[in-house]
Image 1 (cartoon, protein in one colour):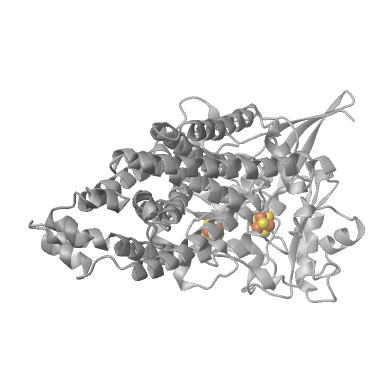
Image 2 (image 1 turned 30 degrees about the vertical axis):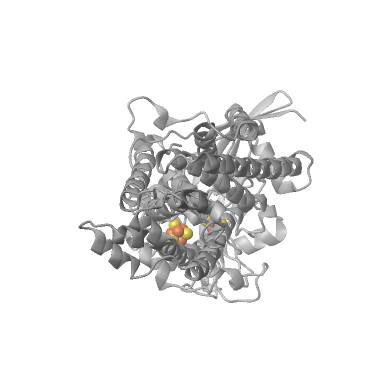
Length: 251
Length: 377
Ligand code: SF4
Ligand code: SF4
């Protein structure tokens, strides 16, 4: 069992002990009341990009776990080829919903379908969502999309159904390199709390003021915002004879 | 340091606000513009503006009634639209929009009725099978300037709210630097006025009696609106170029290196400058040309903002590709809304054909020998 999983089980037991390293006070003013979940926890993820091998096992595990439609992704490992001073290497950056503390996707939602649980997980009630996609526009991380099977907004939920059952998110469970570490920020002894305290991890687009709760260790500033580079070369759906609706969204 | 980054694997997010949204913002903008152009002639009873106002009213009505259909179609779950009305979500401009739209459209219908009441009354006096219906529709009254003014002020409030919410809804999206600018609501409004003046010029030719005075006036208005568009566009550019504000610089940097965006920019400038020059140099006889360019330019602006804006990735490199789908989410949606608009225009102009007399009234009043005309005065 890897570090992240072991810590998670311990975290559950030791929940509610002590104060959180990071202020986890709900930013309720703009976003509306938090509902559901257990306020004793504040779930978060630390991604150690140095350990990511870019195998996309998390991408696949997420799709299987959450029945993500073809050509849509709740998480993906963005992979870059970086050439610097004549040397070329790869850079991997797992991306997912940041379950932001001050999530801009919430206040814009006209129906209240998008909301934050007391444990910080941002979810979409797809029985309420009208599919207006305002939240898709408002997320600064392109973390959301319209699921064409439900015709509602969709995104990573930290595998909320698994977390509620005391399990790890599927991507964490499957991570080969142990790069994804999940846990409770309100438990000062959890690995995520410790890493956040000791490693000074970075977040994506801090200037947006969203206060992400997905942290990155080893995040190169060149990848912190919109990446300045040559766009993706891998376009599997751009092959000929692929139906138009598939073509609209490709990886 | 010389770094070269090539993205090998990343997700491509498809456009989530569809061409339906472009149609909605285009139509509702033109409708607001049409209302504003109709106010001097009707709500403020300035007879010199009456004929232009009538064409403006046609623009406002046809576009204003077609717009909500396009908006509804942009929802991926249109059947759930009532969910807007089951909650209180004051933090969402879209939620406010769901209250403002019915207010505006209802106000518009009432206002249009007060404006057209005089005509309904006239039709009710003609000896025809439909006369009773017209009389019913007129509710036994005619021109009532006070009523028109009250209704006009209400619809003016609605129009202001629509302009405010449609602009703010997009401008608050901090995640998209291209949208996140206080200039955007102003740009929406000025380009909407351009589009409305353009459509007035076109309808003056095809759905009214091609009055040259209306054409000249509308062309001059158009030139003014285009001037405003250029001024605001120039300011936006200055903010980006001279680094006055970071969001604007970011927005500009995001698209400046793209060939497609450069072509779009040149196109937009041409579609603004050309009708401006023509309208100023020759306000009579050019209305159809300037009108068509103006309407096209108002539409293009929205297409570029919405569809173009969504092809700029928030985290990934380069741009997402967009190909207009042929189905309801693309071309069919655009043609469908245009068809609906045309249908509304045909119905309204069939029920209320352009009155035979023309303003200023004293000129024609001399010829107003028949009973109907005399009664209308
Ligand atoms: S990453 Fe995007 S979708 Fe997730 S909480 Fe933050 S703003 Fe919302
Ligand atoms: S798509 Fe759904 S969740 Fe997103 S803003 Fe609209 S109603 Fe809310």
